Length: 112
Image (cartoon, rainbow, N blue to C red; front, side):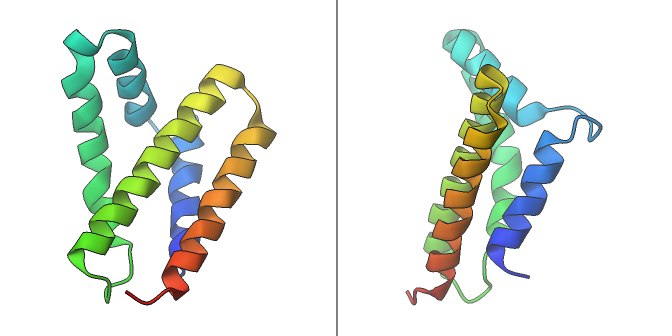
């Protein structure tokens, strides 16, 4: 399965209202609201997702590349979640997701 397809699956889970607690967007929102009090919560929520996202990157990538792309994916998904919650503009958020998936497709075909 291509990396983009895997990321789309993660997105579906993150945006499924029946999937359980929405840790990433809620923790990010609290961290934005009161960074002094909740920055660690936001950071911890992100750290929960990074290992799983790095693990879905191609096995032949270097650790540095998996780290960089994992950070890109998590940061973009977090931003899209916040945008979806604050704007409610599903089509705009889907356009952003499509752009991320195209970038990942190019990344997968680019040698290190």
